[in-house]
Length: 274
Image (cartoon, rainbow, N blue to C red):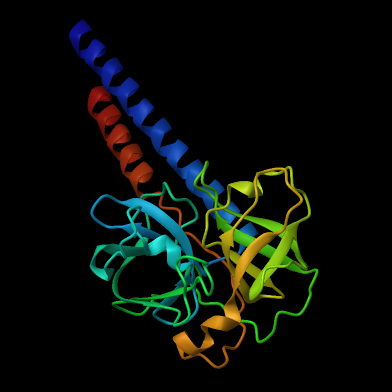
């Protein structure tokens, strides 16, 4: 009898630990969902090499099967261009460390016809995926490209935090700068964690894509951030006009695993009591 009670205690303790772990996962998923709803950027994706799952840059969905990013992210450290076959686009998640994502193979990479890898002029690349992005719910959406780069105070930068992996946003305002052909913007609070944004982050003003982050100053700096002008991508993407879509993020939280554990625990207690 003592052995039965001992093993019963061990089993219940183990199940409690497992339930606790599941609850932690659920809490994390709920937090992730809350963050996603707050930042409201289902057009933001992440680019990886598929052979070692290395994060490269952020990217922005601009059509049903195309992503806009910075061209120099698609170069090896030794200077060669990465072939499409080794690239993966991950969509529909709010943290780089999340195991859940929609993965898309890349079939084609097109650099801007005037891209100069030395001067970094027209530092834009279009990535085409093998199948259209699944947009049956609201966690994956494309964004419209702005028709002009008019000064606006209603702007934000959205992208991946390189330290936490979270999908973050920060309020920005358009600024003038001496960099020809680029778009510049400044962070309202240079001391916050927005300096951790990865390259390829999106500059969005009035719900339209204005630019793609290609250079950022050091943290706690008042220097402007430099973005590639999204209008330069019209020709390479074959896009003339996109209607602005209402974007929101919904992530399902699955309780099925916790429910199954409770059933097992309840059944085991019934056996012990009988």
